[in-house]
Amino acid sequence: DMPGVKKEDIKIEVKRNQLFISGERHRAVSKDDGETTLRHERSYGLFERSFTLPESIAAEKIEAQYENGVLNIALPKAEE
Image (cartoon, rainbow, N blue to C red; front, side):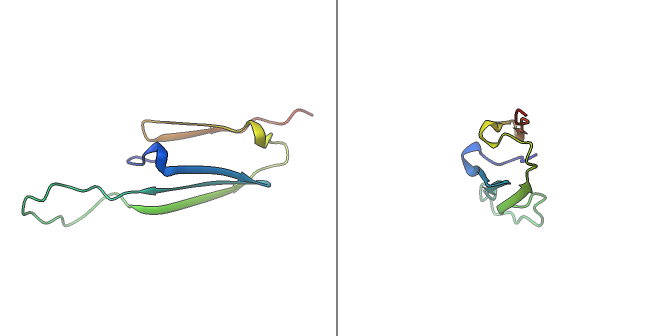
């Protein structure tokens, strides 16, 4: 789940047997009406996750979909 992250701010790469997901969540800018915000519930800034892929994955066939703040990545098995 990545609420508040735009699709164009997400980068997905496969290098050797590693899957890298990185991106940036921008801080929500509110209209300045003279009030001070005391607390933000969502974190913001750069993020990165990496996963080691098993050898049984067909890296060239990996597919990703991003909709309504949810990233789904399909990792199909390689044919034997």
